Image (tube, rainbow, N blue to C red; front, side, top):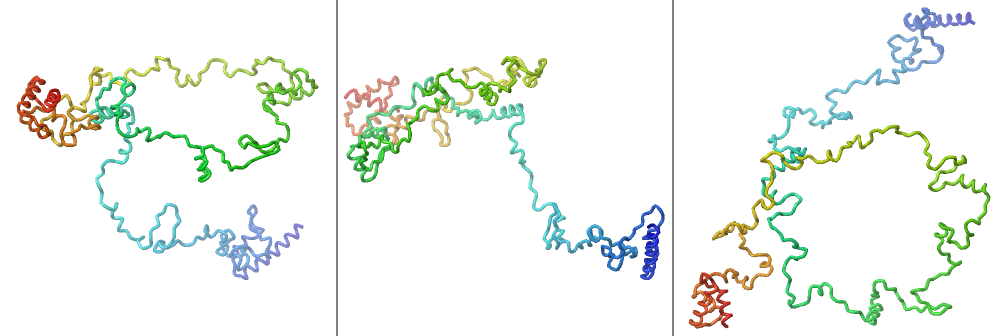
Length: 466
C-alpha cells in the first residue's frame, strides 16, 4: 500500500509540475505544495484536485497553483470584505450630504454645515448681569437649628412678625374677659318687636297636616307618593283563604318545612334535639385514631402517631441566647430618664443680654387703638390711626337716628350759647317765649359743673319742665 501511495504521489507531482510550467507558474508554488517537503513541516496538500477551490482565487484554476498575488483572495476574505477590503471613506466634500447615525453627533443642514462664522462668537446675544441665582431662591429654608434661630432673630425686628406670628391669630393687644363666647355671647340681642315673621318661621315654616283626601287626589293626578309609601294600584287580591293584605303577604310556597337555627346547631350540636345526648355515641376506636392522625386539631399539636410522652410545656432544642446579649434597645441607646431630658439651653439663650424675658403683666408692641395719646385737633385724610374716637361695632350696625343727616352724637353734647340753642329749637318747630327760653337755659346750666349747656342737656331740662 505504501509503495502504491508513493507511486501515485510521484505521478501526481510530475503532472502538477508540468501543468505549472505550462501555465507560467513558479517553482516556488510547486515546492510549497509538494507533499514530500522538509520533514516536520506540514505542507498544504490538495486531496481533491478534481474540485474547484472556493473563493475568487479559484476562478482561473486551482488556488494552490496560483501565484502569491492571486492566492490572497481566499474564502475568508471573500466572506469578510469589511475586514480585509474596506470600502474607501467618503470624501469630505460629500459627508455633509450623507446621513450619520453615530450616537451623540449633531447633524447640520447641508446649506450651513460649512458655515464657520458662528465659531468666532462664544454665545449669541448680549450678556446680562447675574442677580439672584435660582438655587438661592429655592433653597430658602435654613439648613440647621442655629441658622433657623438666627433667621428668627432677624425676622423679630419686623412689625408684621410681631403682629402676625406664624401659626397664630392676628394680635391686636385686646384682653378678652373670661367666659366671653361661652357664658357671655357676642353681640347685642335683636329686639323682638320687629314687624314681620321670625327668621325661623321663614326658613322652616310650620308644616300643617295634609288631608288624606287631598293626598289621594295628588296621587291619582300626579303620582305624588310620600317617601317610603307603597305604590297601590287599587288591585283586590283574593286567594283561597280570602282577602290578601299586600303589606304582609309573601308570594311563593315552602317546599319543605323551614329549618331554624341551622348555623347554631352546626357549631353547637347540643342545641339539636335530634342528636343523641353526649356520652352515648359509641364508635370504633380505630376510626377515632385515624381521624386524630389525619385531622389538624385547633390550637394543639398534630399527632403523628408517636404517642405523647412529654408534657405540654416541654420546649425542645437549645436556647439561641446562652447569656444576656445586646439587642436593638442597647444599640439605639439605653439611656436613663435623666439623660433623655432636653438640654437646659433648648429654646432659650443662656447668654446675658440675649434673653427675651420680661414681667408677665407687661404687654409688648403698640396698641391698635391709640387711647394713650391725644387725638389731633385737625385729623389728616392720610391718618388712618384710630385714637378711640371712632364708632364701635354697635354704632355701625345700629347708627344713630340723625346719622344720615350728618349729625353725630358729639354734636348734641357740644357746648352752645343761648342764641344757638334758640335758633336750633326754633328750626325744629318749637316756639318758646324769651322768658321761658332763658329760664330753661339757666336750669340746664346747673346740670354741668362748668355751667355749659348743650342741646342734649337743654332737651332733657325742657322735657322735665313739660
